[in-house]
Figure 1 (spheres, rainbow, N blue to C red):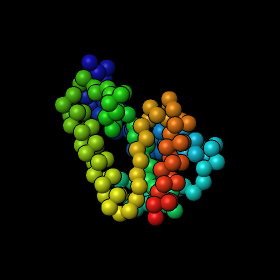
Figure 2: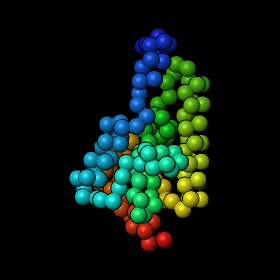
Figure 3: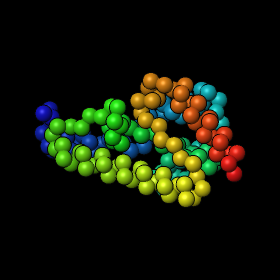
Length: 142
């Protein structure tokens, strides 16, 4: 059972930002900076489909940092019990949109990767390795 009434829950959820989140985007950008990885930009205004969080322009690599709740992470999944049908449909639409964006980017000649919020928490070194490998293979593939 939700501890908020419907109006309060709606107000709370409407204030959650879709970009610039500290637990995901800031953490990832900080990781790139601390690791000395260069050649990336914030991708929200890149004009690319799906507004990636970070882009590596020379490598044509788009990186999306997905919040576990909003994108339906199967490992961290927690669907609210209140209004469950709505949330399940919402998360499913987000997942379908994510798949479509990846397809469109591929047809445009871009590589794309998705990183889960929990991966930043538990395996930041692994995340960096994946980014570096994909960045290098994307450059060579041109």
